[in-house]
Length: 142
Image (cartoon, rainbow, N blue to C red; front, side, top):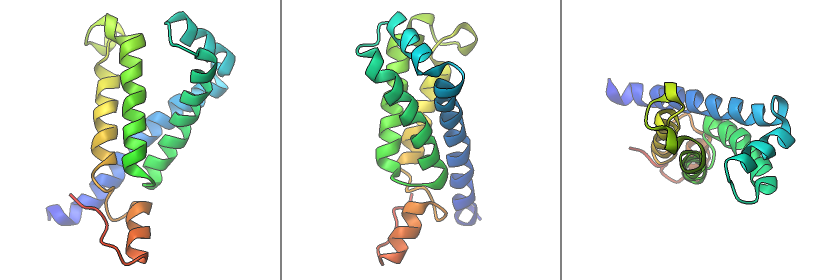
C-alpha cells in the first residue's frame, strides 16, 4: 500500500510546496514589484539587492513551477533551500523561531521540504522520472 501511495504523496507534496514558492515569487513581481522588493532587500542588508531581488523572484516562480511538474528536482530543491537559508539569515533569524513573531519556523520548514522533495526523485509522476523512463534509465526512487 505504501508503494502505491508514494507517487501520489510525492506529487501532492511537490504541488503544495511549489505553489507556496510560486505565489511568493509572483508577489515579488506583482504585489511588491521588483523596485519594492529591492528596497526591502536593501533595508534588511541583502548584498546587491538590485540583482538579488529579481533573481529571487525568478527563482521562486520558476522553482515553484519546477517543483510542481517535477523537473530538475535536485538542483531546484538545493537552490530553493539556499534561498530560504538567506531568508533566515537576513530576515527571520533575529525574530526567533515562532512564525507568528516573524521568526524562521516557516522558512526553515520550506528549506527542509525543498531538500526532501528535491532529493526523493519526485515520484513516478515527476517530469524527471517520466524522462528517465523514456531514456531507459531507472528513475531515482526513495
